[in-house]
Amino acid sequence: MMKTTDDQGRDGRGGPLRMARWSRRAFVARLGGGLGGVGLASVLGAEGLMASEAGTRAVAGVGRPMPAPTRPRVRRVIQLFMNGGASQMDLFDYKPELDRRAGQRFDPGSGARVEAPTSEPGKVLKPPFPLRRRGASGRWVSDLLPHLGGCVDELAFLMAMQSRTNVHGPGSYLMNTGFLLPGFPCMGAWVGYALGSECDNLPGFVVLPDSKGLPYNARGNFSAGFLPVTHQGTMIQAHLERPVADLALPKGAGHLGGAAGEDALGVLGTINRMHLRQAGEDDRLEARIEAYELAARMQLAAPEALDLRSETDATRRLYGLDDPVTEDFGRRCLLARRLVERGVRFVQVWSGAGGPSNNWDNHKSIVKELPPMCRATDRPAAALIRDLRARGLLDDTLVLWNTEFGRMPFSQDGEGRDHNGGTFVGWMAGAGVRPGAAIGESDPWGWKAERDVTTPHDLHATVLHLLGIDHERLVVRHNGANRRLTDVHGAVIRGLLA
Image 1 (tube, helix red, strand yellow):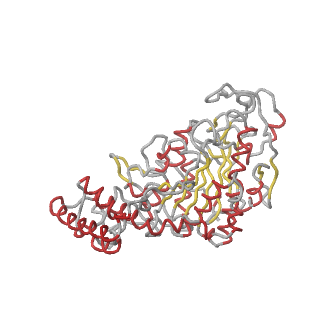
Image 2 (tube, one colour):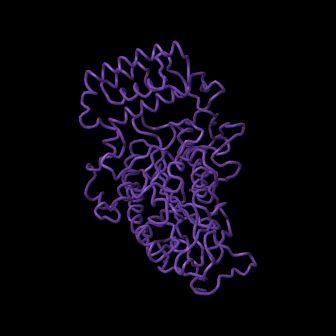
Image 3 (cartoon, helix red, strand yellow):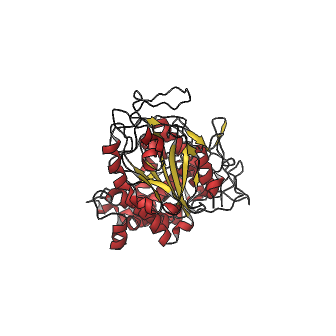
């Protein structure tokens, strides 16, 4: 259930909201000689931010989330984000007009001015790889995505999404936070703020970036903005030997554990009690301590969650861990399944780094740049759908496939495509979604969204609705304005719902 707060940060029964799971005394006793407690003492002590067990209290956050009247269909979300602007007409949006007019000057016939954001409009460019009808639904899917094509009847498509920008940074912010500018909470942070976590020992929101680098906007895409920092995305670098920094004692630091650790925690408790008498209550302190408590609990839970050795050979092959091309994205998709299985509520898996290459931003050559991105993600993405279905997790898990905008129907530099906010494609699968559905249609060129247009705000409203949250009532007062994920826009996309 969503939390309801009053102005004093108390729940509807008069009790404190978001009480710390352990008192300071219980935390000291349970943690024993762990490194997390030593780190907590060091950081809080250095900043003069300590409190005693008597200081355990509510953290109301900075807003007043309200309960929604809808029954939740979804408990958890996995979002696959294709960084760079995946080309809709080369993957899912088949346009015969591009075949018929290939090589001609692009003229939509409406008298509209034709522009491109980073280049001069070229000739009409047809998809260099065939698209075919797949499954009982007959949805068009490129030959570059044979595995997703094989499970297309599980998917529900948004065929006429539209962005307010064709610039990567603002476009990615809009798709993640609902705003073009930085500083606003992303969808994963809003979900965690509204619903809390389903598990004690892992974060509620986890981000798995591409091993080649962070996306455009870097960590800004998964920021908590003005919400409590505990709701920001916890980044796990799945390709590293130590995916989470400082999770284990460094080599040669065994002296920090055992009796020494217990002594340090005892000192921590004493200093906490002294500080509270001097400083009184501080909600920021409680949020900070909660974050460090979670870090300490993760020392026990995260190594098991991130260890894929317990997975069968068949599962590892399903996700493509046996192939260097698919291993990175496949590993992260498999980790996403393991994390939601253990109670993580929102997981983002990114494909593509920021910059001119190694992503879906195919300015130079669709022929050369699009196939490797598809090969790396197709098999793992389809495996995720099938694996969740086989384990019964798709009944209450929502899978999203998104990108920040699409590409132009005409060429750039001969065989590339420029940015296009006018139309692009995304899809959903899983809980609450009508399999095989398709909402919207672009014009005959794939240039502009034309019928049943949807926006990032509509997508966010729909995801929140499936989680049991009314997007118009999840509001935070910040800097004199009522802020929400959908800004002042957004409508639930009813045609996608089962």
